[in-house]
Image (cartoon, rainbow, N blue to C red; front, side, top):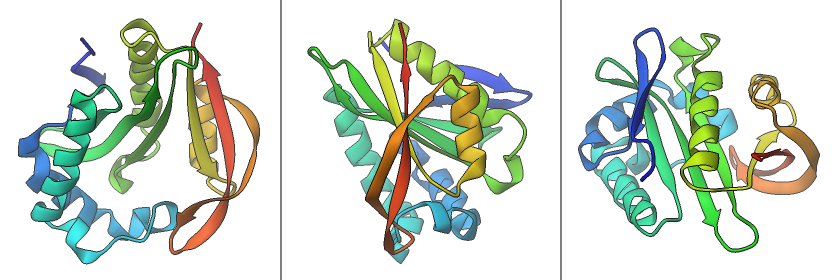
Amino acid sequence: MIAEAATLTGDVRMRLLQAADAEALSAAYRLNRDHLAPWEPARADEFFTAAGQRAVIESKLALHAAGQEVPWILLAGSRVVGAITLTGIVRGPFLSAHVGYWVDKDFNGLGIGSSAFAFVLAAARDELGLHRVQAATLEHNTPSRKILSRAGFDEIGLAPSYLKIAGSWQDHVLFQRILE
């Protein structure tokens, strides 16, 4: 059983995503739309609605039930202020997953991302039995690169045209953290 909740810093806590989070998550994405746009795939307007988030949550919870993903949200009171997710969980000899995250523009620089990473990496190692977690970030995303470095990730290479972000295929720096 994966750890479902934790207190990160101050009044910010994290817990597993729930079906009832659609309204709060859509509000968070609307509030952070411009802030996140340079770092994420181009999003259709539907994504920013409660109905759009219900569909996203349903998909994420199905993947979680199948053991392929673990989605957490970050909360300050009842306000969603970010998310962190282990995706693409692979068992067998690989025992690996990818991690992706975002933090609300008003909560950047408070150590929330670093605290969330510490929690997720411990859960990946101790509860999921994973050997490795990988992350990718745009070359010019200095804050994310710093968080990954502080979390003990090592840079392992450059992936040209890795993901379509903000409407164009962009290079990403790849990182990994060996958990043993």
